[in-house]
Image (cartoon, rainbow, N blue to C red):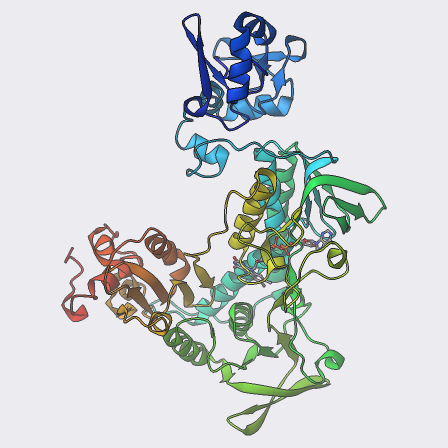
Length: 600
Ligand SMILES: Cc1cc2nc3c(=O)[nH]c(=O)nc-3n(C[C@H](O)[C@H](O)[C@H](O)COP(=O)(O)OP(=O)(O)OC[C@H]3O[C@@H](n4cnc5c(N)ncnc54)[C@H](O)[C@@H]3O)c2cc1C
């Protein structure tokens, strides 16, 4: 293995991010030598023989790129040859996962595409950037062991950093324990219950019966426990460079935390990933009455006979329909004029009709006046200047989530907080304290787990390599897991008009999509928004049973500037719901009633 080492100072050029092409060179005795800088090349030129002698035996570990003298070098066997390395079993293991990549990297030639992307975390980099270590116990210290924290820890380990993570509660954070995973499995369970009596197929007998909620809930808990072990704890165990402290952390400076047991841990950089918690709007009587939030609602001992849900954004809507489908009588109250208020208006209007048809009582544009509890709950609200009340056995408040930023020292270390208590960061996820980065829900909206994970990865990379990668949320897909699901990406028609432009739009009701007809579920539509000049897709808004599965294609279209013609000319298998995307794109220029299944 031919290693690129500066023959004057002995540094690994690869570790410094200097490819062969970018290195300073000097020819001596018929050989071209590569240097980390021109100064080294000049010094070398003064006495080449002496410097070649000095550095000739140095080796570089192919994985961590540490420069080693022969006494400190170990070897292992790979493909019939001895590979010199630093002696760390982790380095040997990682090397063996992608040997071609590491060999080529060491030689200063381009890494194999794909493997290199995987290891380096992106295809747009042309050099491995050296990481800054500082002189602390660790290079990177992460406060919070949820999805953003995991993204940061894994990225840090991949970059060769010594990483520590502090987690005060249950490892894995919101998504796996009390968020995405439990809610989505309960939603599917509730759907199965609903389909026993509500399916569109003739000849298939409906079977009535009550769900066994404790069994449903325990089944959910078993899934959560299993996924927490396999997707979080086991994953962390496989990264030897990451040390986990299962304790509360208090931030004491840009480079240190104190653990609950009093230990002080230091690091070059900090990443704050402490997430967010359910937040209740200030409603008179609410605190005294007590209420359910998303976490306690999914852990109830018994199903209530009736439930009022305040808040019709994703969490409120998903849980409202979930309980409705388990046989609970649900009343939904929303202050804004529509449910799913951040989505295209047509989606909120249509979804409200479908939910009402299932039996949900929905009131939008309401002002909640007060909550009282007298055995059951009474919520007093006004709607169109008319006073109304809703009563139910239980009350679920889903009016948003607020960042966890209070009570662990952030106020004293120069980190700026925003109006809703979120950590304010720049595009590199760096806070006002240059040594502290933050990612995930703690930085405020948008609060999605894939944004948190991407943010954690980005923050760790920027913290360790010096602000190289800005956070890019331009083509962010969003999904609300109601049935039918809501999924969107990019601009709405109204947003384009607000910017002073006239968009092209196409809307295809699902009754024109063969898959929906075959499944006898034609609820919803696909709406596409394109730029009138370039015909590039700039937005997509879908209401469909599996809208969440369809939106990624359109997120790619928005991100990579695909045109209407790119969508219409691509194969979309028959019968799939995603064929609706192609058909919707065709309706920019064709009459929908003249589209055949086989029109190409
Ligand atoms: C009901 C519900 C359903 C959801 N469904 C989806 C979905 O389907 N899809 C989706 O993309 N998103 C969904 N989300 C959002 C998603 O769960 C979050 O965006 C994501 O989990 C946030 O990750 P995070 O790492 O930023 O924070 P978290 O996962 O909350 O992690 C923060 C961690 O920090 C720890 N911590 C806090 N303070 C300290 C301290 N001082 N010291 C040590 N540790 C500390 C906490 O204990 C916690 O474990 C849902 C959320 C909810 C509530």
